Image (cartoon, rainbow over all chains, first blue to last red; front, top):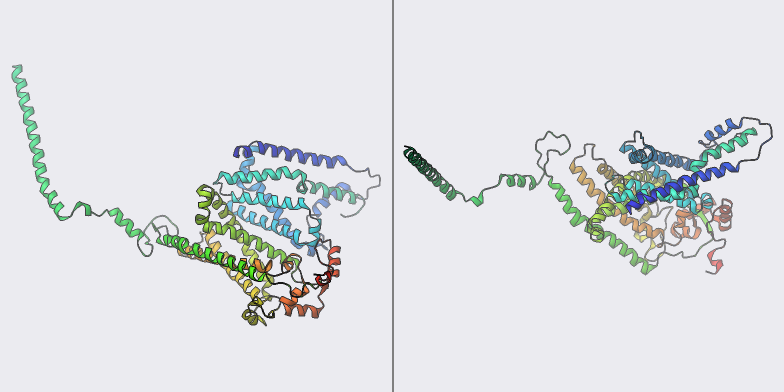
Length: 212
Length: 364
């Protein structure tokens, strides 16, 4: 079982993940848009960049209403990416199996604190999703599966932190592979689409002189 | 000539052999009396091994003996700390059996109570009118703490009772994996529980001070055993007691947990052992309380779970269990008709099932 998870399943998951993401992105870009013959009031490129950056901060009018989502959202996403890119076992894995080079990982205490921040953020976001009537209505099974799968991946990673038992490491890797296979077919794709989406909206409105 | 030489050499060899034998005999004769005398004075079997004496001295004291060492660190001069054995004995012979008895006993009482009473029903059925009891932030906070506490309780119980309960079931190898994972998870989520408890305190402390009707509520045991339901405000006395238990035991668990998780701030072994005892006892008490809390929030009290899911409770539920609060809400005009709430929630896009008509009108 260990050999299967470390070997064939890993390569299968990697292939599904990469080809799925490329296919999804390609299909989005290939769809294109109708040619806009109007005289541009503002540079579309500048607006695309500005909107992409502006969306990192909520509009002033919205801030009091989305404080929980804002704080928890940043806690989870920043924490997750810090863990993904700077956890010592991940850096070593990327160096040995994918990239051939590594970088300085975060110390153990930073890993613990980052994990706690990420877990708290994810849990708060999911609770908001199910307890708020609006988000509950617009959520479907995909949202819940993605949240639970991400939580399980993070949890198994932290449980295997001591790297003492092969079983725990393999369990973590197995859940990661499940997530990689699920990723391209779910809203987790927003990890790749959120910048193009913002840029497209910013360019479209910016060309018409509107701050989006 | 040659024959004479060989004969002389042979005589010399014989002579030296005799001398050697005589020397050995003399030596043995000189040692023997002393050996015999020593044997008479103290039998060999009673010779004390200095090593054994040393270890007895180290282990069988009433308190640890600190020696001298160049190794820096807390208790590094103590070879064997006898309190470790005391803690092990307390854990295996007292704490674990008591924890099992308490948790099993509470569960048994709850099951028995439910079989007899079938929980507290809504005496007047549903009114179809609603009161907002908990805002979204309160519900998120509640479920945040609940989720983390249940995870900590499960992993903590595995660590506490795993040797007794799990090893016979899954064996040593599997248990070592489960225990390692439980320890990592327990240590990871512990600090989040502290943040949650602080959040609960900030949000709910103002409603949990002793107030009018609390003594009466306690004397009537909340109306669980019949009679008129006692008067209560936003929180009744039972809920207030649970709140303060969560705060005080929760803070104790967090403080002792941090002492155990970060043992490099100068805390000595005695403090760590006390922390272990407090952590274990406190956790078991809180888990026992949690059983009761979960029961009263679900099957034990009809329609009470809604307050922590949608945030709204039926007006009849409020009048029955929190009459003072219900009267205050009615005086403020805070009662929302079912139709109005359903419309409001439909506008907000909810799938909440809120009955448009009172249960009585639906023929129930």
